[in-house]
Amino acid sequence: MIEALSQLIERGGYPGIVLLTFLETIFPPLPSEIFMPLAGYVASRGELSLAGVIVAGSVGSLGGAWLWYVVGRAIGLDRARQLARRHGRWLTLHPRDIDRADAWFDRHGGWVVLFGRMVPAIRSLVSVPAGIAQMPAGRFLLLSAVGSTIWTTVLMSAGHALGAEYERVGGWAGPVSNLVIGAMVLVYLVRLVTFKAD
Image (cartoon, rainbow, N blue to C red):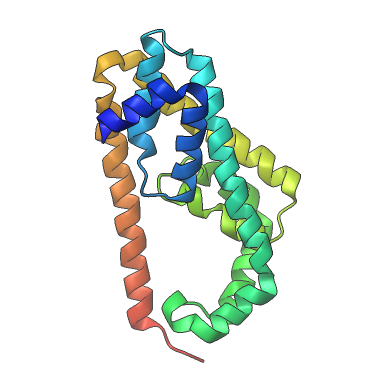
């Protein structure tokens, strides 16, 4: 897979990086902690500039975040409540949970979006509740752009600095991502088993 990603980055250049980071945001299993450092490594060889790959990565990441935000806005609070009523067992949510989450997001949503864009696995999902909560689009874009740029800069700069040993970045970012995903699955299973319908 690394060889295929390397070829896509080398042949696709900046547009290829935009595409990869966009897809990584839409489909979280695509490993940003592998291809972002790889893009930094390609830049270290002089084929692309580090600033260019960071900008391309941030643009693609922001595009994916925006798409999920639009999905969240399309669902809206009323439809989210309806989904909780119909499929509450599998969503492990009651309509009142949606209202509580909405109120909590109104108070803390800015920090959640900003830092959520820097957490593996969470970074793709955080846009949906922001859309459901009707966070102002300009605020969402600003916070997402800052968080995405920080995440992209860290990973790509690490790959650039490490050169041919860029895979070491995936060595620490990969397990963190797996830990977050495992914790999310565990929390879901516990909620599913203990869920009580109204």
